[in-house]
Length: 46
Image 1 (cartoon, rainbow, N blue to C red):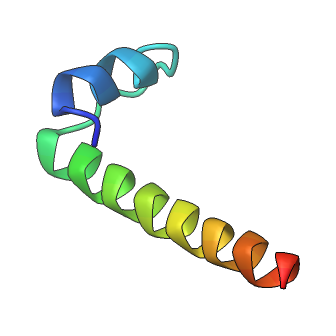
Image 2 (cartoon, rainbow, N blue to C red; image 1 turned 180 degrees about the vertical axis):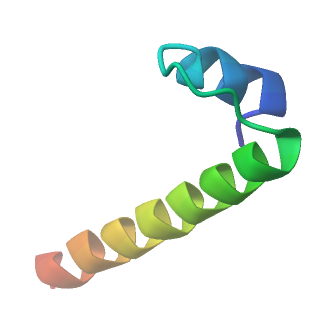
């Protein structure tokens, strides 16, 4: 899992400043989406 600092560094390209809480929400949402994508890919193999 990425730290808040790592996420902030990745988001630095955007002009908007994100709060720590916003970064946590974005990170957690992206992790859920990644888990779903992996599950779909694994199910398609079968």
